[in-house]
Amino acid sequence: MEEKKLDINSIIGFILIFGILLYIMYQNQPTPEEIEAQKKAEQEQVEAEPKSSSKQNEAIVTTAEDYTNTQNLDSTQRVALHNKLGAFSYALTQSTNLEKTKVETDVFKLTFNNTGGHLAEVELKNFVDYDSVPIYLVKDNNSNFNITFGTSDNRIFNTQDLPFQPFVTKSGENTIVSMKLKVSESAFLEYRYELKPDDYMIDFSIRSQGLSGVFNTSQPINLDWRQKNIRHAKSISYENRYTRLTYMYDGDKVDKLSQMGDDDETVNDLSWLSYRQHFFSTILVAGEGTFNDVAITSTDLVEDEEVDTLFTKKYTAKMPLAFKGGELNESFGLYYGPTDSKVLKTYGKNLEDSIPFGWGIFGWINKALFIPLFGWLSGFLPYGIAIIVMTILVKILLSFVQYKQFLSQAKMKILKPELDAIRQKYKDNKLKAQQETMALQSKAGASPLSGCLPGLMQIPVFYALFMFFPTAFDLRQKSFLWADDLSSYDSIFDLPFNIPFYGDHVSLFPILAAIAIFFYMKMTTGQQMATQAPQQEGMPDMGKMMKYMIYFSPLLMLVFFNNYASGLSLYYFISNLISIGIMLVIKNYIIDEDKVLAKIEVSKSKPKKENRFQRKMKEMMEQAEQQKQIQQRKKKK
Image (tube, rainbow, N blue to C red):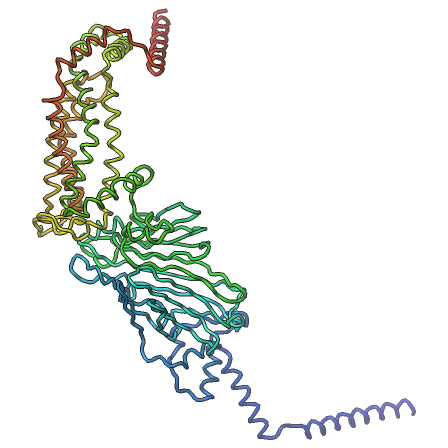
């Protein structure tokens, strides 16, 4: 009975406890007003959660569509805006009267986009293009400057989408343009531009204040700078040939992306980055220190000159920025101006090396000789006359080379009967014939190399000038005779169609240069063929090749230079005219073949001491002769 009683008591106890719990729950249930308040709180919590955050740890990427510049908001709307966009919702509540901010200096007309805070237009006041239209380096959204960063509330922002508040002030003669992306009146991200009178370099800085708690410093912050270069010249293909992304890294090393086609690279220790558009450049210069892990690309936009005539190349550069104490503080130089060595040199940091003067000795010749010389001549002479005078000076300087070449050819012509006799005497022993030929030439002081080596000295000068004229900014839009622009082609007739590799026009200076080259080569080739040895079995017919070159070289000049700078064609025309004149003077008034023959006879009578090279060649030929004789004996056995 006791166990049964306990069981009944236990059951009664559980029932009693259960009843008490129900009573307590009934007494503590929410009132209808409390239930409504709870529902409202839950609804606000749902609205506070961004719609795109389906995953708790996924960052919210805001876009331009998320931003509406609304200043007249009540408190409830401000809270909703803050819940939607976080700390940077404050920027949307600030008053901006205009979408763009315009500033003008001696050299610029600048327009800043208040959305994004960067330059929407850059007009160079002192220059126009081939069609007399002002030169724009930035216009019609061809350039984009953006910083991507994360925030502590797990959002991703792009500055190109955000509203900046402009402030334009004066500091002495300098103009300060401050573009601020505000989180509050005392916390902001600022783009600061300092413009100086008559100066193409803008002091540019990116800094933050009071954002150490807003930025997510564990996420990378990247600067992305993109630009499509606008066409400025008559020939887009010619302009595109000298349009390249150039950069300096590792102290003083300069490199470039591909001249034609697409290219990309990742660079460390970058000092500056140049978006060069032939005669105009946009350059980003590092302030203190250098850029690292910079991903750069170049895309060629000129597929067909007849189809795409607006842009030449598209450049991009993406580089990480560094937080310092949770804040940003970066300084740069922004150059928008002419690709002029005199101007670029004034800013230091070897910015003039962005101009393609040629590598190695060729660039050195241009910098040390031709640029100063032409700058001096053009200071008091018309530019076309300055080219002619410089050409005359260069040819006079190299006239000794032509003299050496012609003297060598004259000696070989005089020795030709004896050389032919040696070849005939040893026609069955070519090695012996070569030994005797070298011995005779050595005694007479008439070596074929003595004519070739001086000629090689002209190659650095030839190539240096080939690079100088297309990059000489001073020639831009300077006229001479029928040429309107010595930095571009001189058109005397426009064709109704386009000829591949030639173009849709006829230039006169390349025609004159081709004619001068033809007659010069006719004279020099005739002299060389007079001293040419008979063709050897198994060897190419050099005489025939030289005849082909007489016609091929002028044709190459005619076609290839039709779209090149007329100043370069003018140089080659005058240069070959002078070469013809120098050759006639040397042949008719300086070199007397009778005197040359007399000197040869005197030289032959004197014992000739062999130099080290001649001894080595003689030993090699003797060894080869011995080896040949051994092989012949083995065959007979």
